Amino acid sequence: MRNLPFVEVRRSARAVRGATEADNARRLIWCRLRHALPLEGVWCSAALAYMAASSVPAATGIHDAADDVHGWHFDTRDFSMLFHSGAFDVNDWLLFDSEVLHRDGKQYSFETKVYARSGVRLANSMQTCIERNGCY
Image (cartoon, rainbow, N blue to C red):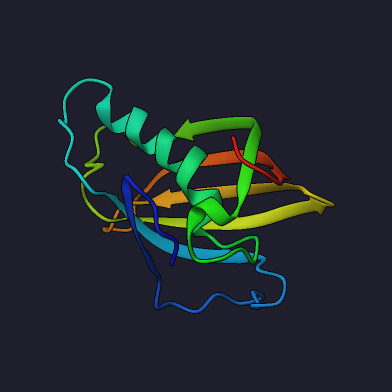
């Protein structure tokens, strides 16, 4: 798994139909914050959006970079998130079901569905990333 500074990541033991290591079409990963946040206010929604927008592209392994997230640099071009659930605990393990919908050269478009441990869908996100070489 990738070495992410703010998020712990574990692969799901559940197999995904249609996904292969060769095309990395779909990945299920469990994520949780390394440091707990307050459950009041906008903290949970903001942290979930952060995890989906910045951590998931690297953690899902849609690119065959080295195990360190710094081996793959990407820019998010478009990001949107729709929340399905009211209150939720962003400090608990959350399941991120990410699927690459389209790849064109160094541009990836994918959808991520986020679930609580109980199975309740919390949110959907759509994102387009551009892969690039070099440092920030």
